[in-house]
Structures are given as C-alpha cells and as structure tokens.
Image (cartoon, rainbow, N blue to C red; front, side):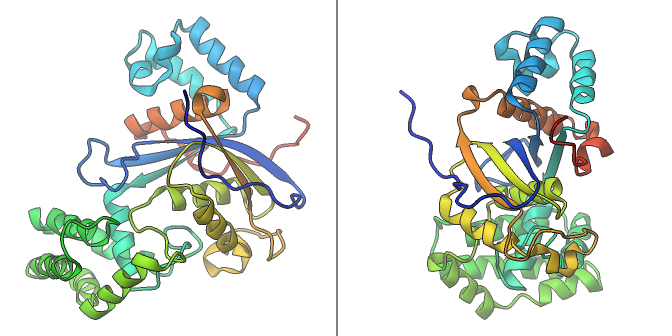
Amino acid sequence: MRSPLQGGLPLRDAVVGAVVEIACDESGFSGTNLLHSTAPVITHASVDLVVDEAVTLITELRSGFRFSPHELKSGRFLRGSGADEALEWFLTALTGRAHVHLIDKEFFLVTRIVDFLLAEPSYAVGTRLALDQRPTALALYAARHSAGSDWGAFLTAFVDLVRMKRRVPVRQSVQRFFQARDALLHHRLGAAADAVLDGLDPGHVRAVLARLDDDRSVPPPLEPLLPALAETVLSWSGGQRQVLVTHDEQSALTADRLTRLQRMMAGGGASSAAAETTWALPDEVSPLAGLVMVDSRDDPRVQVADLLAGVARRRPGILGDALRQPPPPRDPEV
C-alpha cells in the first residue's frame, strides 16, 4: 500500500497572464551525502509535454526500439541494444520541449560556504537572483586543484558543520572546520582564494549555525533541490509567464519551503542579477504558481523527465545548448 504523498504547493490564486505547465524529476540526489557518492553531479530535468505526448514518446521507445518498461530507467536504457540510436531519437524528440539544470556537487558546496558563512543565508542563494557572491565562490573553487587532499577535508568539515543532525557538538564542529580552513591557507592558493578563506569568522559561523537550528527563513544548506527547482522555474518563465510544476515526490519539497521559495521569487525582475531577463510579471506575482507532487509511476510526463535527468547525469556531454537554454514560449494551442 502506497504512503500518502507529502509536500507540494497548492495553486491558491488564479494564474496571471500566460502560464506553462512542466513535469520534473531529478537524478543523482543523495541527500546530505554530497561528497561520498559515485555521482559528482545532480541533474534536474523538466519537460512541457502533455500526458498524451509523453505516452506516445514512451510507447515509441518501447516499440520502435524494443525497450521493455523496466528498461526505461537511465542505467538500463543506456546499456540496451541500440541505445545510441534511441538516445539520439529521444533527445531530438524533446528539442524545444525540455530543459536540464546541472549541479556540480563540489561547486554547490563552495557556493554554500560563501553564501551562508560570508554573506546572508536566504532562499535566493544558489539561484540567478543572488549572484553577488558568485565570483568569490568561483575564485575559491578554481584553486581546489592546488590543495590536494586538504580540499576534500575542508568540504567534508563544512558538510559535518551544517548538517541537520550533527555527529559532534557545535564547538567541536566549528573547531574542525577552521582547522581544515587553516590547512588550506598553508597551500597559499592565491590572493583571491586566500581572501575568501581569511574572511571566514568563527563568531559569524556560530551565529549562522544558531539560526539553522530554529530559523525557518534560512533554507537547509545541503539541499540542492530547492535552488535547482528555482532555476528550472526561472528558465521556463523567462519573467514572462507563470509556471505550474508537477514533480516526482521529494521529501525536501515541503509546503513551508516551497511557500518561502515562491515568495522569494516574486518580484525577481527587480534583481540586478536578473537584468538579462525582460521581466513582465507584476512584482507581487511569483513565476512559481504552484507545485503538485505525484508518484512517477502514475505520470508519464514525470517518467520522461526522469529518463532525461538520468541520461544527462550519466552522460553530461549530451547536454547541448538545446537542453541547457530556456525553452522558447510556444503558442498554447500548438
């Protein structure tokens, strides 16, 4: 017997103007276990197919390329007979109808160190609506190859520091984190990277940790799915239309977090980081109109997104501009 679906964000108000409905799934998400995994990247895929289109696509894969139902998971799909031909057909069929957001796990952790411990934690961090600190994060990330094994130890210390269920007391976690920071400084990674590390302050770090324990306005630091969802919505919206999301069930997408994410995204056009977008939505209207949680077994659109996310994670080289760029708006009658 299936458990009832949790989370989601009901559509409480009528959509404003144009709207696009997308179905989403991810691949490579391993909870807070971001470093100890065989998957260095996470992919979040979305499609704007209607149910009948998704059913037709899945049927064609099963009949035209002789894939059985259980082979439509990415691992089996890519090992199947004629996989290359089927993959080319699959990606061509989704041209202009799909988008993939890719997350490098190590870089994600670096952005969290900078955004949470040097700047102000918020639901905007990790998205294009809060890019002020991105050059700082890039400077530290670019120096990682000069740090040897101390780089991994530093990231591990950060994960242990901010995980929700800490394995050691806060004082000890902070001490270990700064010991790992000091070890990196000994490598003299360069002026820009060293400045980032020097800027970390124990008092500020302890204050942030105190907020993480009871301040729900601060997003979970080790949760990449929230900024990935925000980026996906921003890509489909383009500042011009609202987005209704159907998503495979994810415990991270709680109603409270989604509500905060929705509010943060309202008025995103006012952000200098969104300057490349001509924002047409009113300031009080969020591009995220609502999110419905489903079991992927019940929705063929989510099954297509799941397959796309899986093959993109396993073969990130397939992500050409057609899948990385925001899909163009289509006539709703097409």
